[in-house]
Image 1: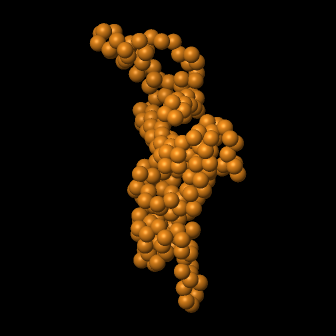
Image 2 (image 1 turned 45 degrees about the vertical axis):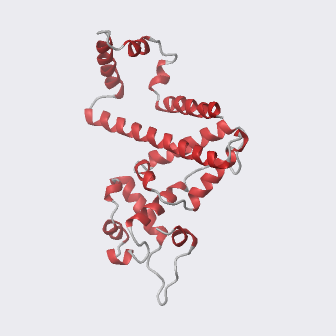
Image 3 (image 1 turned 60 degrees about the vertical axis):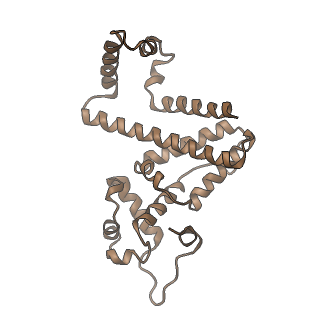
Amino acid sequence: MDPEVLWSQAERPRRGRPPAHSRAEITAEAVALADTEGLAAVTMRAVAARIGAGTMSLYSYVPNKETLLELMIDHVSGDHRLPPEPSGDWRADLRGIAHEQRAIMRRHPWLPAALPARQTFGPNTLAVVEYTLAALAPVGLDAPARLETFSLLTGFVASHVTYELAQEQATEAAGRTSGELLDAQTRHLRAATATGGYPHLAQALAAPAADPAAQADPEAVFDRLLNRMINGLTTAV
């Protein structure tokens, strides 16, 4: 895949009649299909059917599925709602970026799995990267380290959302509430630690939770883990 061809060149005008479709339309339909049926459902044939075009004609707009995936990732990156400029409080700014990423990944559950295959940054993604690098300027990291921090943050959010979605699917499949499953898991672990073979786990289970409600609230859990990761960046500096 050539990033210059993909992002730096506008769609070539054709002679004769105007094109019946556009790359943007095709990308939006592919995103909608992935949102409802999963990434595996996104094939050139399926997307062509959604826009009422022949499969082969789709290749004149998008040369292959790999390119379509790049377009889809950048398309949903445009959902980020970030301030025009960072606030100067880099921790708060990183938290804001992470919460935006989490919201987007939950709206588009296929995105965490798609990100590792990304080969290039489109214009929407570049805008998010630029904002993040600016937000990290007060930390004192050099530019390559700030890029790595962006990758770390995105990877953390993608991993956490993948876990959240998997737990929600498991709960639904089990036909029990998350609270019921948590209680069953707790009983199992307490029985296991009662054998004396897991002293450190027993200590962790015995410690009272500071706020039991926060332990179960997905937003609170995400915030707690996110703050721990962000504070780790300070230690690294």
